[in-house]
Image (cartoon, rainbow, N blue to C red; front, side):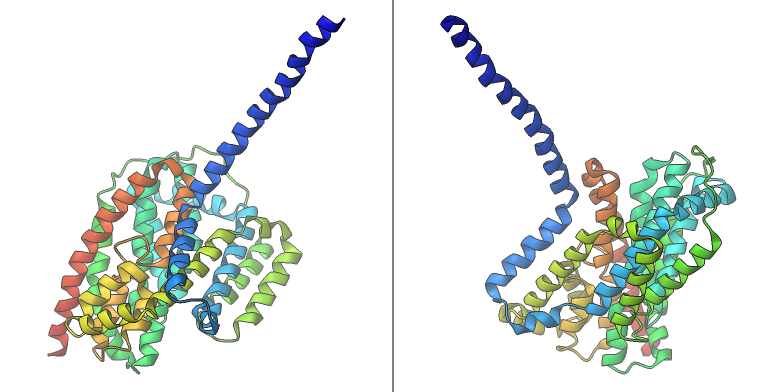
Length: 399
């Protein structure tokens, strides 16, 4: 009996070890997938943390955070989440595929609804709204291979579409007010870059083959009309935060309470990681503008060429912080205005809208990130080079 006891004891010890090994592997893979899906957030947090060593946390940190933007983003994400739960985007995707009939027309529809939508609701909100639509359209007709291209073109359209109006992009509102630019002059400054951007986007979309598309998923029943009207009203309320029609907290409370009553599970689908990414990016750009060496270097350079220096600075600290920072060092608001609009192209951090698109794409196809970034860089930097030339052509209108 003693021998049997000795033989059975090791087996009892080995079995739990095997079970533990099998349970640890799935958890490890899940953690790795989670980290990969949040790579943009991790980079933003790391960048913010590094700048904190140069600018220790103090009371000024509170001024970094644009509560209007964050509230607008949260409310928009929440309403879009509620629309997703009612399968609104899937229903609309079916309508688009049926109406436009081929891939080229579908691409034009998705890109230019984003382009013109950004004039009304600003670039970030346009992407939060129309990227899910783009994904559902491509999925419904089995054309997921175009996801990277369509997302990138939607991103470019969002960044460039809002340049024509003072309220199309946040940096426009700031410079329009800070330099007391007249409306007519504003339109004249942005007319040539806007027209060139339109032609570039249209020409690029035209290379998509006009191959037929048809539904490969069953039709989706139309959501209840009354509920959609309520959600659209909440969405409009969310966008009005950007225009400061009323204090941000009024819309924040109204949208939160309404969705809590009508669609409480929508809160579970909100991309809180994106909100945290914005917060980290605010800290990064805010700290960078307070580092004396950085501010001194920019002050000397901006005198040489506000357009080139402004565009280059956007690649590092994004376009909105660039507008607020460089406006202290130049009175050449014309070139600065162009710079912070076209400067949203280029690197993924040149515009927060680009971070939104990258994060959305990684959720859909994490393994395709490198291919996405390659195509993103090719299109963005090509457009940027052409638009810089268009920016200098604007001088001809003011001779």
